[in-house]
Image (cartoon, rainbow, N blue to C red):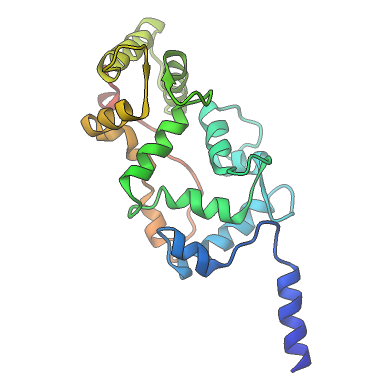
Length: 219
C-alpha cells in the first residue's frame, strides 16, 4: 500500500509546469477525456523534441510545423504567439489543448472566426490594417509555394479591403471580419483540422495546412 501511495506522489511530482487535470480541460474544450489523454502523448513528444522540460518552445513549435526549427514564417510566429496565451515564451499543456480545441471540427464557428481575426491582427490594434492584410496574403502564398506579381498582390489586398471595410476607415474591424467570413467561408477553412476528431486513433504530424487554391483568394 505504501509503495502505491509513493507511486502516485512521484507521478504528481513529475507533472510538467502548467499541468492541468485532463477532466477539467475536457469540460472546457471540444475534446473528451480520452482525446485529452491522447493530446498529452502528442504534447510530450513535441515538448521534448529539443528541450525536454515539459513545455513547447518556439523552436519545437516550428519543428513540428515545418520539420525545421529555424524557418522564418509570419504565420508560424503568430500561431505560436496565439497558442502562448500567457505570453511567457513557451506553450504549456493547458494552452496547447485549449488552442487546438478551436481547430476541432465541433468547435463553435464564432471561436474560429475570432482566432482567425487575431491571426491577421499582427500588431494587436484590434483591427486588420492594410499592411497586416498584405503580410498575411504574402505569407499564405509563401506557405502554398505560390508566386504572384506585386501588382496582383496589391490588387488582392485592395479588393479585400474594398469588400470588407464597410465603414470606409481603411481597416477591418471584428464585425466587418465576421461579415466577410460569412460571405467567403473559405477564409476560415484552415481553422478546422478533421483529424482532431480521431486523435485517439492516430498521431499524424502536427502540420497546419495553409495551402489555399487560387479560387479561394478574394480577387
